[in-house]
Length: 443
Ligand code: SAM
Image 1 (tube, protein in one colour):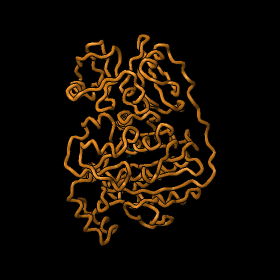
Image 2: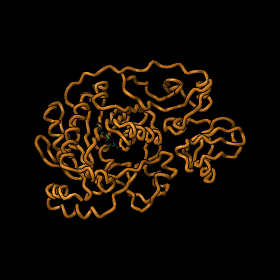
Image 3: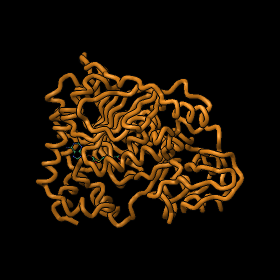
Image 4: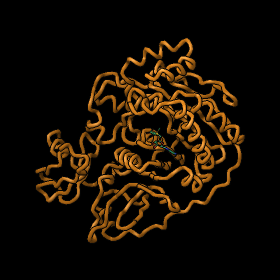
């Protein structure tokens, strides 16, 4: 471990430094979160697939108490029933406290741990804008949102400076889970430890202030901003909030209103009792959380919506055949790709959009070729008219990408295991052709 880092931790922790050093020999805390869009936490526990104890950091979170490995390949993971997440990482969304119907911006969103938690809390009445500046990470964000069946979301790939001015005054809540020096990630990420230096910590602090400068204008009056990091350095935590409050008298620091972790440092305009710090002595690898509210009027830029596309007849026939109800859905067709969701589709100017809504499928030669997301979305999971329940052997074959020999209605079928969709196939009556995405197959 870096000597200079340890010295700083000694100054920060005082009498508790030895207890912190002890934790460095322990394996990292592991956890997962029930995806409330698909399953309630008690129903997930009843499935007895892992040793779980309730997490102190989120009502839908669990600490993994056993040594199970490979949970990322478990069928419930594939079905989007849970998300693997270090327990303290769920604390920021607990503090943000998104409510059903809220509009929420997650500005630094990949790989999507907090975005998926927000999407589940706001439900299908709320709307999430999940942004990630890094292209490769943005694709991982999209695949996680797809796996968890999120529909009411816009996934963008832009810098905060590009994106935020177009969202002025739109948001009930904003999360800035900022890129940081990752001092709480040293056990998991060798790179974070290798990159660590005091200069790096300071440059992260400057970048974090810049991100907050963009984020703040997207909030409505009374809107809530949560700032979080997975690092311990005051330069990236209380100092960033102090600088921000000096520039923004319209923002007030609120008490995080939670019991987990411990108070932070009182520094400048920051009352340490209001912010929250989590160290490994508090049952998580490490997090800092601060909650702020905008107490001034905020004019907003007008929301522009994509003109509703008339559904091509082939698509209308397909949806009427596959779903019990489509009256509450909006559709958007772009270059043969058809998306759907409950909200109207938003139009942004020159912002790369990875996805908006559910990717329903592609129009090919006057037919709709459905997409995996259509069959895994939580919005539609109880609306499929043609479903087949797989047994364990059929599931194994399906995940391998093999055809299933069985009598079934002709056409596209939603294939389920233990009541939840896994994916889809196309039946000719005797054999179901496998449509499980190649990249997800087990062989
Ligand atoms: N919220 C994510 C989650 O819970 O899964 C983790 C976010 S991670 C701590 C910070 C993210 O910020 C990274 O994905 C990183 O690519 C992104 N980032 C890096 N530089 C940035 C910048 N200048 N502006 C906005 N985001 C940035």
